[in-house]
Image (cartoon, rainbow, N blue to C red):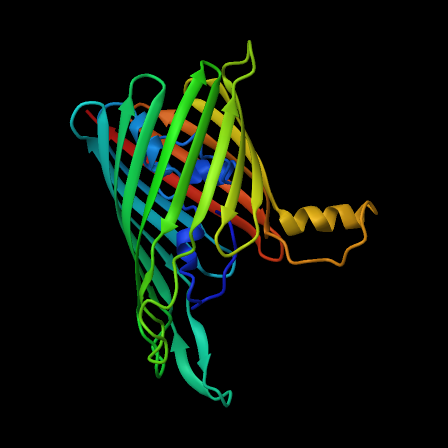
Length: 312
């Protein structure tokens, strides 16, 4: 989950930008080339084709310290030769917020939430290339107050992965490409905005002699926000245990850092809240358990947990 912060009840469907699955969260989103299985949904759908044979059920939970939480459930299975299909649904629950009108009078508690169902198809083209597409819907309820509407949107993701060498992989995708079909209020015209789309590109590398290690680098160019880069690391100690870590910096973060070091003269700008992440995977027979923790500036620690079960 891009990792941008967004305000509650905005027109940008912020839940589409949040990674619920623990594995990509653990590498701070540096996952476009590494993506595999249902954890690729929302980042690069081509990765679904890399999932092992069989049917998979998975559930993810993401917990924030401000009482907001998110999650995703998914089911995937083989679909024709060298192809897979997945059904998934993600949500973002903002918790309970005291509502006030324009004169600052209490109007009761608001309970905004978002819901994002999707259908993903991916296929392998030989041993080196995969491609995939997702069709998705978006619903955002800003809460029950006068003039509020449940905003609706529809969009698509598309991506490819290519492995030019045994120890090198590349990936590219476009995510959340689509319009807002219904506004958040009666004053907002239908079709007046777009989903928070982005282009993503990345690569991973296995150092020679260290095939159990992966180093991944991603670049993200959102349509509505500043570009960002993410660096991730994974290492498989044994077949049943992986560890990972990552960091993510956007353009404003880099300018701030150069200013603090005295390399340039610049005023401090707002940067991405996500700075560091770490995670692990445990494999126990047919079950996989992924955990990740992220550190967000001004927010604290965010935790993600994914449990997946394979059925032959």
